[in-house]
Length: 423
Image 1 (cartoon, rainbow, N blue to C red):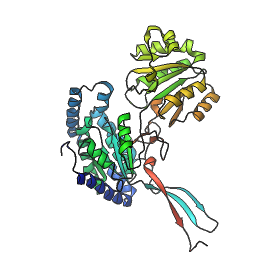
Image 2: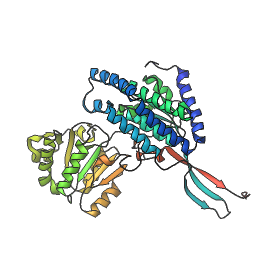
Image 3: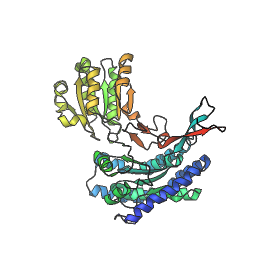
Image 4: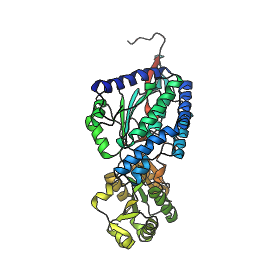
């Protein structure tokens, strides 16, 4: 099928097929789903040539369209990345079973036994940009949790995502589960997306993962509940009680290790008490790493010609590049205020040897991941022990932060009695 829009009935059929697949998945046992994921990983390896051919075509189109740097890197697949994707699927398969888990149980005075039991959400629509590995991560997590999923990637990765979808669907069907358990939208047309967002009878949750424009478009058009995986304006706060060598290493890793991802630091806040010593060292380190520093007046004075004066818009910008905004703040309270004003509820880190300051920071900062004395790059499902993640939720309802298998489930009440009736 081409990139042209689906007919109206085609989008509805896609959603209905997912609903039917979800019913079958809900009846499946954990052993079959584990086997299915093992087949997905094996098929990714066996059909890697097919995937790489399609990815090369996407990359050629992207370069012709002027896409460079971090965005091109996010799109690129090679054998090493495909192997990493296959291992991630296997890691999801090895996770403890969530479906059917009893989270709590209690007995009422009348003898009724009440339990809360984990169940699938049903049908997930995943809408995302650039990174083709999201296709297999999302498919694996949904299969693990007995959810059907409809995947709609960006136009820049159209061929790659379609190839990955074919591979996953083939493995799913070989295992005995419905091939429609995992479907990739066969079009990148925006009208078809909007139609999908109206299929509220068959789709239970929409997860958009990408830039501000994508998130806003989904929120404006969806009739289905939306769980945002929004931009990452992440901060490192160097507290007055920080070890400076540790702080430099954390700032470097948070900004430079992979600048084009959502958990990279976009702003560094330096306590006024240590600014004279720390800011020049930070600016020197960033210059060595070819990172552009955009600083406030104090940072410009202390960092010299290494610093570009920051614009007001820089404080809330997700650069996704080797650019970082640096501001000097008057204490921990000012740092928290800055994060509250300019952050995106993603990830914030404090560097300090002061246990009381660390405790206050973790209590007062409301972001989905708050880190003490470590890089923001650890805000990741795999790094936090969740296996692959479907994304990092910046919505506070249902799931918040790195969203693994448990975030794709809900609970139902199971009540057992012995003939009780209500008086």
